Image 1: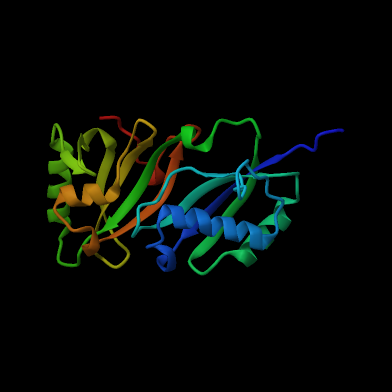
Image 2: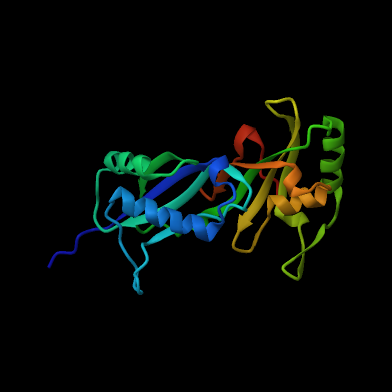
Length: 228
């Protein structure tokens, strides 16, 4: 019997305020429901019940919004991507917006292994001036190491900060932009950087602008990824 070729589909989506407190595992389950509701031809792995074959590039920390989240889904057979996108757009809940649906080579490297960094922007409290934001950001960049403890493990946050800058927000508030490493060898969390800067994560707004992959190594707005 001739084997039907499978199709690897890359879905890019944005996450808004409605889903900012949805954890990663819940987001995985949400996408399983979306795909079933959209009635796209998903391929399944072994198991009981068999899970659909999907993989996210990187988890988004709880409390963050995002312009770019990426996952790969394996379809059991090729389908029209315009039709698949239309079905997905009808199936997603409030707070999730489909940005792109495209095909990638089935044999391409796993998405997680191609992830290099994430670019975030942090909107600071209204009483923080641009001067104060710049001073705190520069102090962190000048630090030879930044010791942090997470889940009872101590690590150095500094090598995970690839770039940092200050910019004005749309509402006039000071914002700190940052490019953080996101590889299997280590991932920088924006909430940890915010804490190292001296603010509570609940006092700021954290937004992921984009993800940076091995095939795209320039951050938005022209900021380079500077290894430190």
